[in-house]
Length: 169
Image (tube, rainbow, N blue to C red; front, side, top):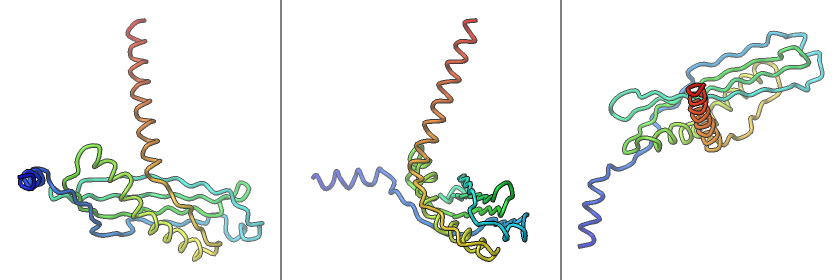
């Protein structure tokens, strides 16, 4: 009897699936605006890394595109040694996951899969551009996701407070 109830419960809940369908480079750009002069300078760059993710539902069959954008700028003194941007994308099949859980999967699990490919693309293009290898440190997308949620919540609370204050004046 307990087995029948468990089987009925499993049939009621859709089975959760998350699988990668395809990984591809959507966009890749490399600029070295200060070359060849930059090669004469001591190689101690100041490096800035910007990360961004976005996702789009592709169809009603559970396919989503997730794009991880990484922009890396290396400067020596005031000169830009190089600027590289990669949009590493993937198509992911997701079913049985909805709402906040779906947003979390799209914002954490998918970028975790895409990141090593983006990192390799950045390293390869920098080396081909005549610069030392660039090995980006691993990224904790779970922590970034939580941080973005906290910031969004703070903005909503701030907007609610501001609106309330304006209403009393």
